[in-house]
Image (cartoon, rainbow, N blue to C red):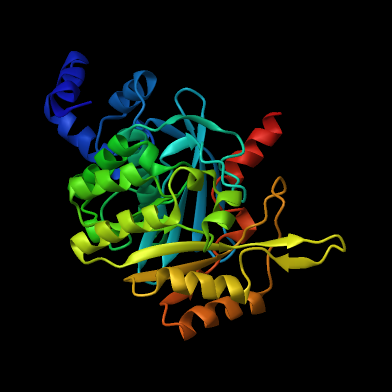
Length: 361
């Protein structure tokens, strides 16, 4: 509801107008229900919960990693579709990875998110609600540590970074994703440069971001150094080739003098003897990637693959991962290996949603 709609809703319930302001403040904190709104009369809280819902999503399942750094949420939308978001507590702050679609139509061969197909785009509010749920989790945990009840008050443990890297292709839902980013900036105070959008390479969408003009971070899911290999694992490459994708990405990065992030999942395959062979992750592939990215203002984020039963790939050894990195560094390419988080709770994109669907079947 808008402010005016909320005021009318409250006064129609026979309440004074100022209650709308109180409720609005709780909504912006991510209150899961009216019962959590402790400065409202108990009878009003009960009446609100009987007729209204604070968020357009509900938590179905919450998983916490053993190290306490990662929390994964399986969320249900009002039409019964399910999505995921992940809260990651890091040395640089608290980052939330949000989904932009229920399902995914990209068809990447290594990914769990696309196995169930695309159901629909998420609204601005459905994306924003994922951040609010993470925010409430952080504030509740902070209040518990302080031996007090969760009350949603701001503290230094709030969400500081957002990555749009969950289920779905953000640039197939560009209008709502841009609307979400603007809300996160205006309502939650998340700076543009602390928001990262990841795309498989939807070139018209990248051009839309250029025209929009905000200095967010852009990440390209590359995952192969040649068009031939990329087309085998990423159908989007049949429409937008590597050079076209990187040219649009370079234009975006140059507009704001931002470093482009290149995401690269390292994949292996099983041969007839059951041994792992390098699929896109050999030293030769690293040399090809180095030539492709030579002279670009970019950073390569190497991602060890999280196993998905339905996918015909294999994880490669740590030594192979480091050899790939060493080759890139030798060729002057800034690179790092993404630290694996929440592997004990299946925190890779789409895994929790997929497991839930299996149980339903």
